[in-house]
Image (tube, rainbow, N blue to C red):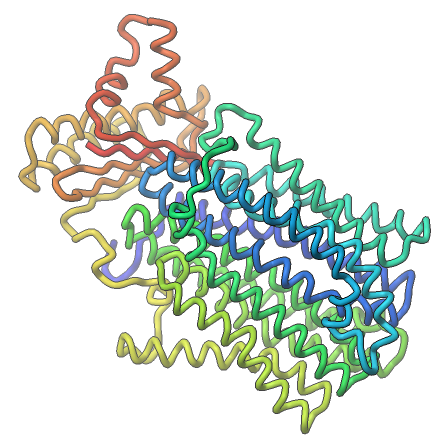
Length: 591
């Protein structure tokens, strides 16, 4: 920390970028698959079919309740446990939730398939739009098979990413998207109608799931898939942490179902068609919010596990930077593409003009939506579940519905589209008033946005952290740790042992993590005094290197004189934990 500026290391910036890129790619490809469905329907069918498809949108939102909720709960709890080095607990919790969900989702798939006609009516195929019921039912029949593979894939995603499988998730997402596009075109070719389009989405979800499962075939992974005894007591924390995102998705589903009723009354089939395209664009722009929220959620969880308030403030600053650039870029693209897109996706001038107006409303909504999503992920990660829950309900249900009802009276269907950005602004205003009341600050800074109480941070004298660049820094780090322990009047033997551990850890970065002639790109150390113990963390961007696995290999080879320091470290430390995520090794040792 220098002056009033928060220090953001290269390794923290790199992790945030990779976390964002992975979450963004996964969300972008899944959203692109949905968008391609709409484009293909526009190109090969008509406005009636488009209007029928929008009636199935609540199905997606209902599917997101368990998918997004459980994924967020797993991410929140497991990221904290990774940060504190509790790898065994991560394995145990993940396997329990995975197998329990598989059983429940199989039952839900059967129920969904049996209740498709009733769902189509419930979602709006009645009254003026009753003629859309057969088309909506066709689409929903095909989508019913998506429940099991899609939700299980979402549950796996944060775990695979935290186990250094972010690249696999990105590749899998692209493959699933391409599968959906190919099968959509085949469906059109063979005349399978909307049922074929929905079935293609289900098949692509199966590709997501089965391809992601290959991650666990590698025995060197820290997190493994294996049957375990289910304990609801252990899963309680995950279910509790899942509530905000589940409520967020439930609010989306309720809002969508209720708004469709307003849209069909005020806009008829034309309004319903435009609303369908508008919702798709909103869903598309939400990938930016998903990317930032994903990065904030995982890194905040890891910081919570480490009790690392310094890096948490840096995460807040990085989140604001990404929000600013992404919002500006998205607004520019939509402003340029609004009219050409409207002309390409509609059949009449009246429909095109209404769509241009709807897309301009999206431009104003994007920056606020990104900030709100990041804020909800942060509140969830630091355990402020109730605040995250109320923010989700306000931004996605209460404000949009109230404003839509009020604005639809004077402005008709256009008032519904105005309600979306207005609701996001009102949510942020309410958040700002709460922040002002809690802190007394009129304008929150970037660091304040993701800041926690001072009790969250280690005391200033109880923590040291800095980067290492050369082998000489390894010896210096060892000396600093010994002096650090001495300054806190710890047992001399414990201080010497902590120094030896730090030297061994940092030296291994250069000896085992680099290829010949390669320079270290980024590495840092952190040491904290915690109730008489010293907790050491070394993070680097070198090749994967697990201390325990390396020690086991040395033991098998029975090589004399090799790994002496490593053996002393493993036998003397209270605990040793290792994980690798976003291409970064993290080793945590408690002395």
